Length: 226
Length: 138
Image (cartoon, rainbow over all chains, first blue to last red; front, side):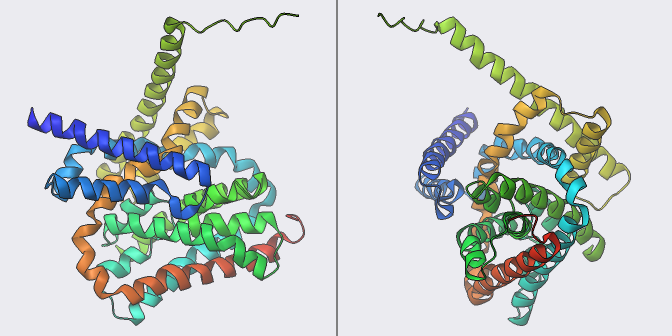
């Protein structure tokens, strides 16, 4: 009974906090207001007030974790709808995605390797530019930390969403397809949400890039590092 | 001229609408879950070292290619699943507290990796994409 009550309370608080922060995000459309940041903060506070451990909270909110399974598979929907773009632009899109998808983890890994960071954190850095559900599972397979992967992926997405368009402006690149590819490849779903505010082309290329980079990286990393 | 009054939606109609949406979501989510479970079985049986979600996603994509369309109920179920995906990460993100001391110890490296490496990778990808796309995206 107590377990059921705590599950309902934990799920309720998480859902209410998410709805609140999601509406704030929709209103202001600013990446730093991403609902996961505010929702997590509220959940931390709730855990602290009710003296709930991380493990207990994860057990109470297991339903949300379960929904991550079908959500990962559902990534096939945007990938299928963007197939025509890949057919028409083929290597012009694939080459920058493959190069960017390799560079992003290698550069991040080099940063932490140069400063002698723990092996587990180093391995987690390799998945920071792919979409969260794939990043979490891939991190586990290559000896990283799945929860850290989720946080790193979100922070990476926020950085690209906030600073990406400014960088494109600074280097005077006014090419929405190129911008979409770079945003989706390096900044995954969060930057893709930002790409939606640029143009439809930018959004389409960004979602295609995030799907391809996610598939290729999560296929390659376990082969290379397991 | 009198403005015709909009017919109020009855409670029964709105309940029917909500139940129908829930039914479609449940059906689509069940099919996506079936792909996931099938992928899980494949990964375990053949001891594949790929994420189960990835195998499930590829399986689902192959299914769409095979039937040459996405069934409507799956498109409708995918919208809330993908649109609110960040909600499903909250329990995982919470576990970050377990690593706070390790992260605090290496904060400079983390900052470099998250800001400098990410933006450098973005810039290089952007330049390469601009080169390969040419004038098509202007």
